[in-house]
Image (tube, rainbow, N blue to C red; front, top):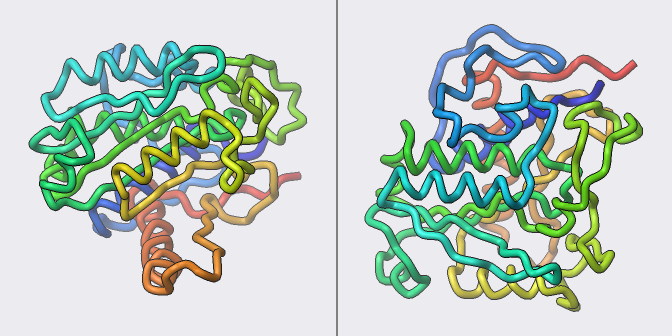
Length: 281
């Protein structure tokens, strides 16, 4: 087995937390392979648990269960507003949770508040479902958990599912993807057969155009696009990549590569005790 859904959810959660909060914590026991510390995600009522948590990490979310989670979380806080990024070709919505204290309900209000905006999204490739589950965990920590104070200084937008139609196109794993969990998951492409991760220039899809509008309206300073790397036999528990566009501003590019992601690596080790996984046989 390669990386587990549980272990990678912990890694993605650490990534988002470091981006907001910085480094702290003490070195603890180091966990190897698919093991993670018990109770690492905290205790939550059923309606705020992810599908992975409720199924012992054998299933991942659907677009319907994501809507149920967003609705439940919105009932627990005054700091959450929901926007629909787009409506898919199969007529499904793509919600993004806008979290801020005090609450903001438009990009204009966000600019007036003068706070930096973060945009985090997952499931551009639904078989790489770890980020979607982890981003729900980040959202509940920010909206109704111990990290709610972080919303005083920034505005965080979280869209757990970007490829909605692909998420709801269910297939059963046969082990060929390098991992046995989750057993049932979506497909890489959208309903029209497009790989959305390849539509950043032509903007041929509804989904890419919707994301384009959101990014232009809200103008985030940090963008997290969650993927999974268990298809490759890496030696470490978390892998990361920053922009490779030569025209990108060198300041942010150097900061994310030399400062932010090394901090994530250290945070994963100190907070969760995860350093590297057992090499694949």
